Amino acid sequence: MRKSLILIASLFLFSLGHAQEIPFRFSLQDAINYALENNRKAINAFRDIEAAERQKWETTASGLPQISAGIDYQNAIKQQVTPVDFDMDGVDEDFVLGDPQNIMATATLNQKIFDGSYLVGLQSAKVFLEISKNAKVKTDLEVRKSVINAYGNVLLAEESIEILNRNIEVLEKNLFETQKIYENGLEEEESVEQLQITLSGVESNLNNTERLKTLAYQMLNITLGLDVYYPLILTDTLETLTKENISLSLLQAESNPENTIDYLIAKNDMVSKELLVKLEKSNALPTLNAFINGGYAGYSEKFTFASSSQRWIGTSIFGVSLDIPIFSSGMRSASTQRAKINLEKAETDLTETEQRIKLEIASAKSDYQFAIEDYQNKKENLALAERIENKNQTKFFEGIGSSFELRQAQTQLYTAQQELLQTMLDVVNTKADLETVLNTPINN
Image (cartoon, rainbow, N blue to C red):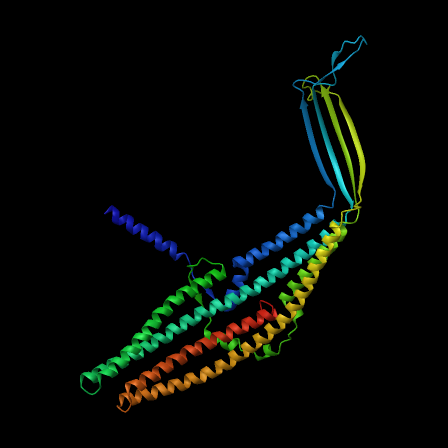
């Protein structure tokens, strides 16, 4: 009895814990907005921006006044002695110089006055921050596209399952009626077998699609930044998304590569290479630094430094240091030339990126236009396949059509159904691809 009560309590707590996981209801736009805040890659991209901002201040602060302090305590356990002939009689006596214990406290203020590498570093920090911001935009665009793809795959699986269940229902009815006709001797056994083969194939597809649906939900959860098993409810349908994503005006959108994020990232790379050239050149410039140092020192036979009677001796120093590079055996020149070569490579890469983006835009527009045209075509084909299947089903049960012809018409219908669903998904996905290439705002 006690074990039964424990089991019941455990099951109750388990069900209560799972009941607390209220499913999220997401339209596609809701899912995109959620992922932009919670996707793990998007979160890390935002952290990269924060790190770049800290690094910018870190670089700036390195040229501002720097203050350091230190305290040194020494206790000569055995003092060093120096032999000295005090009486000039040729006999040396031990002489101890200084007190055995001393403390010295110092503070130093350092300030850069001129350093070419520091000025280049300030510019580099700004560029690095810009690179991080562009990387965040790139990540958000990719996250948006991934959400659209994952969301669409879930809808494809859901609607495929719905269609397959309807097909199975019709096939089971046909098989039952054909079996009765065969048992009455009015139909050949082959007709029953043909329907059994068709039904078995559709049931196998259903089982596979059920497994794919589970994987599709898990992939969507990962893309959203949720636990892989978190329950979801999707409020959009594939047909609704297809109609919303047919936008012929997008095919006429401006194809300027300079407005795309990939071009801006390549340009950032070129600017960073320009700054490296400046940095190498700045190494040939002199550097000027100033410092102020102040401190107090105390000496004693015993540890009396906490006493108010302890005597302290103050010191202070001001200084300026000028470092002038004169000769490096060609090392600085070689470094500068290497930086220039890398700059030339970055300029070539920028040109290559521009041409590649032009091709990607043209290709994405072509794919999107084909997806729209293919969707219209497959929609018409499905209507034809449905009429053909209906005619063959009527002819079969009237005894003027063969089971082979019926199976062929059914197979054609099932293929047309899946092809239409796939073209609907293609319309949504190719539009997302085109928007990503065009760097369309992520919350359009």
